[in-house]
Image (tube, rainbow, N blue to C red; front, top):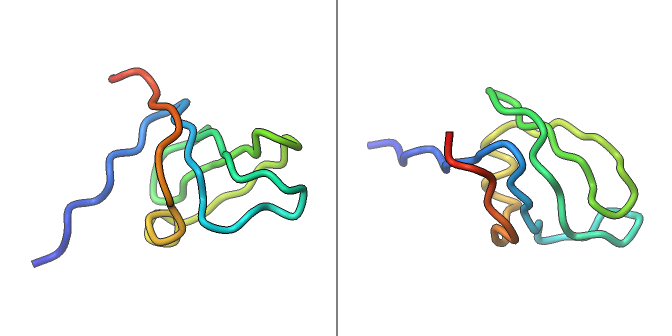
Length: 68
């Protein structure tokens, strides 16, 4: 039985396990779907990660977005 996908919301701030080259660990969720859009809170860089990769790299939620 497959595990239930993690609940991501727009405007969540997540902390990943490894730092971005700029030194930041925190990312804001800007897009939801099969790919999750993230924006670095330190330098403003935008990246897209597939949901499975993001769930594997996620360390914790720093701040949760509003419930839809």
